[in-house]
Length: 636
Ligand SMILES: *[C@@H]1O[C@H](CO)[C@@H](O)[C@H](O)[C@H]1NC(C)=O
Ligand SMILES: *[C@@H]1O[C@H](CO)[C@@H](O)[C@H](O)[C@H]1NC(C)=O
Ligand SMILES: *[C@@H]1O[C@H](CO)[C@@H](O)[C@H](O)[C@H]1NC(C)=O
Ligand SMILES: *[C@@H]1O[C@H](CO)[C@@H](O)[C@H](O)[C@H]1NC(C)=O
Image (cartoon, rainbow, N blue to C red; front, side, top):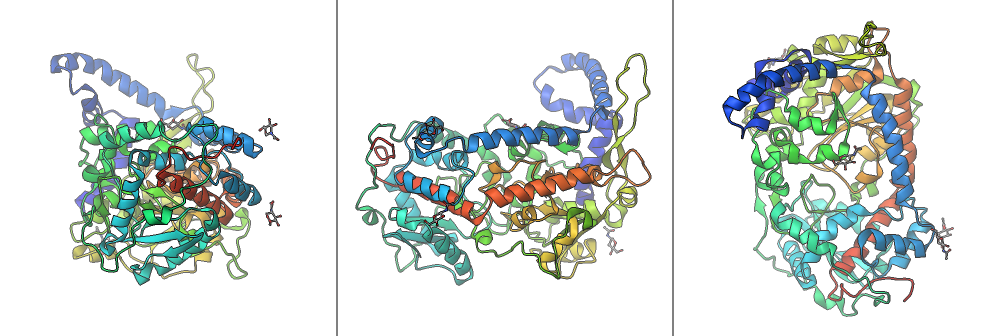
């Protein structure tokens, strides 16, 4: 319990110390890392000055003259406009080829004309910006094609690896022989998806990760030179050969009837993985590699501030970068105790549905969404009414599936459990939380223009629950999953009452839909976006579409630490009994509708096909013995 309280206490205490007063403890914790190499007499001299500056800084930061969310929403519009203008600037194939060569410093792969026609025919809004494919594949250029093929064979040939093969021969996709029946639907879905464009693909084998958790974490020192090398490879010739090598099938060894027993993967299920597989993807001097943050009772402000504006998340991309966030080691199920963790430090070609920062898995659009395993499908019984007709409730249903808590209390650090605690103020044990409230400053000579102002206040969750003008309905469904020993009963008591299962379509009756990281990709985020409700998301896992969405325009982002949870919700729903802290329903509805509209344009099944088609053409080239000559240009 103490550990749990401290995980939650993080937040409030640090806010307290940083905003309302300045305690010695907070000083030690913020100053030490910065000054650790400076002689102490010098530090003593500096300290007096620094305390003053700090208290001034935070007392100033405590009053802000604009609401950060207003600014973030404003900026988001500009950022999205920039994204749109560069994602499809080319108007025809010639321009698309030029744009490709400018961006990626090599010719597009063979088959690019067919891909382009396919994308245009499916009305794809994105034609030029496939940087995520480029980044995922870049280090593989440092491996010989024959070595990529051998590694593919190696991971598919041992079923223990939890990796399944799909082979493409003569324009048809098919599943490799040794696949577990439980995952059959996923591979059937992939075959169905790939067959849309398989006639244009060369013969090859692909290795798909059957686990939710990502698999390939190559140390920074190894991967960076590979990326650099990769960025210089590929053909830039005016007249490259247009077609893949003709004898490609022979280049892929058949998957043996008898499984092999060698494996490149190390199993670390139920164990901490942050140091061994997480932070190794960061530069050697980064905080994630040089600092430990096992002490979770204070908010690590150096960890959160680079991607925050006050209590609000300001940079979604940066917030996924763990290199400045050593405290995440103890704040996520994937780093604390993943359910299925078989990973490698060597660059193996593994296609995964999601990954966290530093992993080298190749992202592809999940068959889960493509096959409508969970679907946005309102009915007469479960209509998706307009935003204003929905209930003023933040809703979440889910399982304790983020990681395994085998009996040592590990669950207390996990994202889902911490948010459940925050939302429900279980047994009145959640510490006070920051919330930003309008509080006009008196006009003085010194500050003649600071009439509009907001001030961070700390409110106990009991106060928040009664004053926030919305309900929270955030519960575990049915039973406690992935637990052992006392962690099952402890969680059952802690999170009681557990909810009974409800229809997924019931989500649309609520205005605010919470999406929290589980063991991997989010199965529900796309349906949430498609609805008239507002998705509010806390996540470290990223998926293929991450770069097309703009946080604060299409959805509301939350820091995984949770310290912005109440402040963010409070902005949209307002506070009862405070005329100034009014609701921002118009803004909430605007984000819900913009997200819905945009998802309807760029996250359709057609967009998944277009992304996957382009990815597999690139992969076809990468695995071709002639890859440094191959390419597509208009001249050939
Ligand atoms: C292709 O589009 C570009 C602008 O993107 C334009 O300048 C060029 O004339 C077009 N070419 C053809 C053949 O239509
Ligand atoms: C795509 O191609 C099909 C068949 O060739 C055609 O019927 C359809 O109109 C095309 N759609 C667009 C948007 O070009
Ligand atoms: C987020 O941070 C990254 C890296 O520092 C930066 O390149 C990017 O422009 C930032 N984005 C926003 C929205 O501030
Ligand atoms: C919280 O309350 C429940 C029921 O009132 C109790 O069973 C549980 O032990 C309490 N948890 C803590 C940590 O006090």
